[in-house]
Length: 111
Image (tube, rainbow, N blue to C red; front, side, top):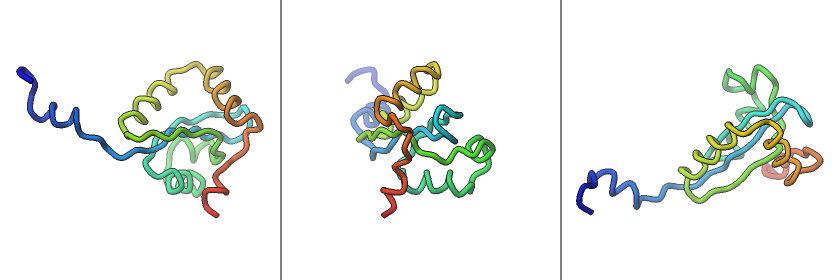
């Protein structure tokens, strides 16, 4: 592995814990927010409770309508970045494919 910085080489073989990419909205076809977390229940609870000032609190985005699970948080972060740069129509189609009624599965996670 000549030419590699040792610290970078170590990180290339290091796997990190996974997480979730998720999309929140305020209503079907409403405002969309894309985020990433390693603890989906905690993070959605934070959004729903308004603990953190910002975009989701300002626009009342409390409805979880989409999420994906990844084994490596780096994959989550890359997927979040990609989705954030998609046109809105692509995001809506992705939600509709997985959740045509825009149902919020969050209550089932906390039972």
